[in-house]
Length: 119
Image 1 (tube, rainbow, N blue to C red):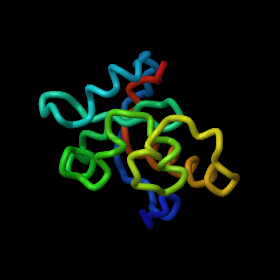
Image 2: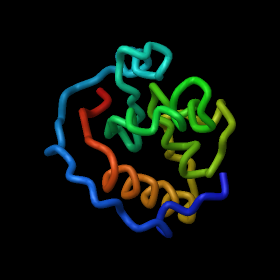
Image 3: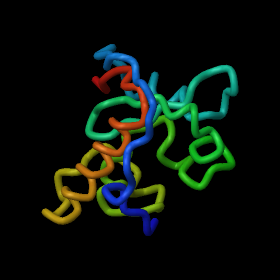
Image 4: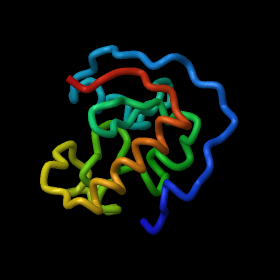
């Protein structure tokens, strides 16, 4: 994953006001793109984003599907596409990885509606 989220300018898209709906990890897992009738969600640092607009990237055949339906903060911070890194606990990331994670958070926040918080 050689993508630098901070190097991309934000799109001209009007986003809905952020929601703080509590979403459990189990509930979040239902929104992994495998059911085409449901939106696709992913979480970064506990904030849940609706990434359905990019089903081609986050859906079952997409290259970033491993992030769908979960909080994948650690993997995003590490720029890792390994399934074992796609977990919520980012407490062991170093300073540079935390910057990458924060850049990803800002990237998603600028592009996708916030639909809730992982509880």
